[in-house]
Image (cartoon, rainbow over all chains, first blue to last red; front, side, top):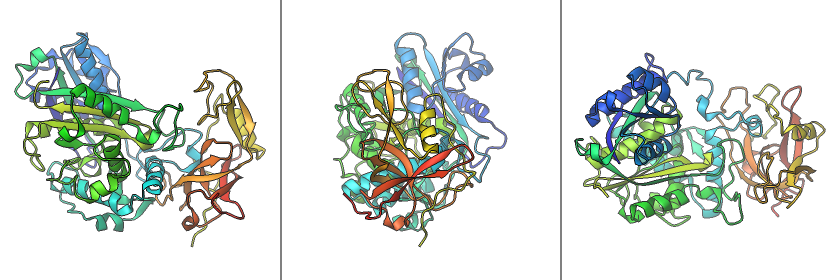
Length: 379
Length: 144
């Protein structure tokens, strides 16, 4: 099957005329138009709002999968097509009107579980506990973390579609000078919050023949160690004596994705990595095999993830600068940017001749990580 | 230099669930409990009803010595909810029984936190019903 269309709606700090479903619908219509597919061809909808979207687009009877998050939603959509249940599947997500209490962090960052809630845990602290352990083990430095944030935020600074367009450029010193949130993370090491919608359209290989710029799913897989923000985020936690540590979540998924694609990390032209916090990029680079364990810090410090580097990362500005609209849309947006890179349609930071893109979701602090690989050529 | 303190009463407090009641009852009488599989001895993470190793369904609650070592920590300056007093230091503690637990370190300056810092449990109320286990450096405080 192929990705036939992608679309990001307007992204902004707030979209007061929308709720999450209505902005997801705007994304859906945009992706269908991009694909050149009429809405009534859709026979499957994936995403937390799938039933309402099916109703409003008049798609019934159709398949629906209320899968949250980006890459898992996309893999579910792909399986609907591979198993012959659907010909055209819409994956749509949106976030608006959710983060209204500005005295608190965004609601999806605040866990309610009884074993963590009393200790003031939230996503920044959870990811910080993983980052600290890596720093203790490998000597990873705050400057290396700041290099990641400066690179991605500068990518967003250049991107006219980014919520934080024009706010930079950023140096690592700028990141380190921002106020401390949860050590080792400064404000600018952390994701922003915003509102927006997006969607992806998947079609059968046959239907893709009529689409203007289909892209191909080369491989994809998911890793989880348990529920996010419920138990202590422990790098060395092994549920079985023969399992890898939780700090390497996503390594198995990446191995599987590379094996499906018949490719190696060196074959990847651009990596649209999910960037909830600066350290998570360093961790993913190691877990996915782009560098050795403990080498992620020096790898980013040497400029490898910057535009023009060996592996440009999160080229639209990611959740740190492009957009971060709730737990679903922001993860799907990594897939959308990867698709734009392979089409050669990026207005900024286009990687020349990009043939293979890897994108990711999640992170160690949340105990899950998903990997998807896209290609320009049909496998 | 600020000293890390327990949170004031009024923070978002834990709501005990069906299988965690014994844990919170223990905290109320200032006794730290952990779960162990009665069949194979596995000590899990979090609260569980099935052993992740042998899949027996008979976990039992055991009393911990309440001592352990600092494994990882952060110092929070921007809390998720305004009721938390900053700075505070969420931490992963490795109990001497080999159990990972989420807690927070109190009773020292943030600068004194280091890998392997020896810690002992202390209990402080989160509200009228819930008592939270915190950890403070032991008197010698040295890494072991």
